[in-house]
Length: 511
Image (cartoon, rainbow, N blue to C red; front, side, top):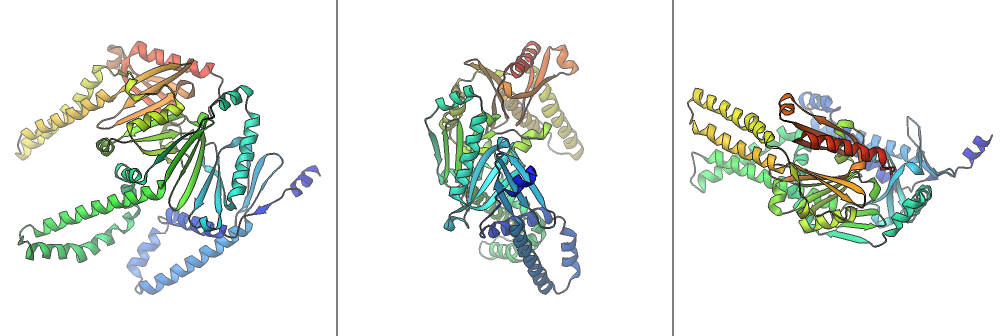
């Protein structure tokens, strides 16, 4: 009877009717993202077998649109939520398969507020509850007022604060000053040049690439070829120049797409740090607000690729815990709750990292590099052997033999750069121990973490490495891993033993 009474006392709430727009957009994106490959065989049959494609295509589109609207409406009608007296978020949803989800306040890591452009005029938002840093365990309440979302956020964090240890609370409240960072849209556009968003854009249109190529060949390449022949007097190489022009045009389009996608994602970027919490607000079509507690940051990744090095910019990622075992790094990067600072200069990198690690200064890190045996091994496997294969190919094909020497010089240069990048640095600050691991090739990649957040540590040693007294150290984190190759055996043993001692002796929780 008590259970029935408590269940009947629950005050189930419906979201705003405007949330129907969110459900339509949400399910449309899911159909495009998840159903495109399942519908590929039907699409092939439709393109190859159906004669009146325009008519039947319109019929299929209309049916799909009506089905989408009906399903979204039924989903909206069944969508209910409430906050129970037991400090739980309860959610009922589903059309054909009814679900009831329970999320305890204690398991909520972040409460993020996203403001899509279609909700802005009516002052509605999406309230996103993130559990354990997993996208699969998100609870989204669409179409609620901003005041209600902020009230739920305060209620959840107030409850979590009561559950924390008094000592932790005292430490947290010592830091009350607010730090902030604003990234201009001009800088955000540079992230479009640095990132791989253009590759993602091309991947999205990959199923239609044949149609695009046929269209360009008929409409564009032929006209370019005629232009080069008539206007410039180039006849023999007109087709080649037309193709080169087309490639340049596609590259420009890809760059513009990447810049546009960066601006949509990070428009008017704002970052605040106060009371051991990050708050990030960014986005053009959807002003997404992300919150992250400092103790949930498992590691910081600072990276700079070739283009970023030319622009003298870095990208910083604050990674949370993510499931995935050996591929945890991939899972962490794909996690929507990862705090990404897209484009920073060197001074900004030091400033932001010092919010988390006050001792951090990239210019003062004294790295211990890998032993020379790594350089010799890589020169043999990745420079000498490829050049020998090229030499044999040139000998058989009667090409210039100097090509093999050029291959050796180029590969040897890359191997040397990679060897020089490897390094690790241990730091002690107020009885807490940190590690910075560096790697890279033309660019550079740093991972900064506190030792007690390590999940496991082990060493790898081949026969030749044992003969030379060397080991490679592999440290697994909840947000990726750190790898230090070819260091002295006594140093490797010390790092592993000391790291495991920190894990076992430190009572702090990092989940």
